[in-house]
Length: 380
Image (tube, rainbow, N blue to C red; front, side, top):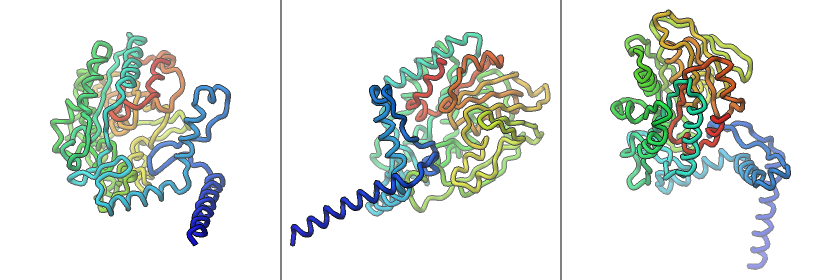
């Protein structure tokens, strides 16, 4: 009887494995994950170079992980089980106090940080004619570690930022996000359910950059502040699937004196007369309301009163933290070029030369910067 049961168990396992494999082969590969707000690994390219460098094996592993059948459902099931066990962490996200969700932040690989900061220094060295500013913003767990669950491990983002600041201080003008955000910690400067800062946090970043450059930023009194959504459940919620979480609100700051800005998306060749895409407010990724989401290369051109112009051109090399900051910068800079280094593969040096760029803002959050090999493209 026991042998029969064992055979049935083995047969059942083999059948389940076969069906799962068949499903994996039949289902079309997904290009983008709304669950994680990122592009998924495409099918690996088989070549001798890729085989010898182990790149093929690494991409194949990522492909299987990213394209696993019904992955989003499995994440939800795992979250439900974890919550039944009263766990305060799921899929790398902690359920903290005051309704905040936090991404786990552990001790980084400092050898990687050295590589990436060296790329920043080399970039500045390659462009001595350019005024290069580097803004590094902590994520919410860096500002609010006391809101983590009891005994949840945390590595200091302030320590990471300080290390990077010391490494690049003789090459670029450095702005540490802790310096302008910590004093406003009692305000809503981060979304509770998402990894980005709020529009208020972005405004503080705009003020910090303006003051660093020596020009007067616009005050909050010069804006209409409007709530455009009160149903935003961001990337942390999506990854963790914790229930009972209150959604965030999204605000937009519109200047009382209107400014006309044209936004050109080089990826698609499209031109828009607004920096905000309201269609995303009906989707999961509501943060893409700002600039219409991720693009490799953009150009924003604003018609400004001459008195409002503080510098003629600016190149922003960034991650998505910049998306809610750039609309503020268009109020003082008539031409802004925007490169997302994760997706732009051209020569940045050539682009700067061709467009006569003399001012550069590198804007990243700490969690992205320390694990972003695309920063090595700065040397192109």
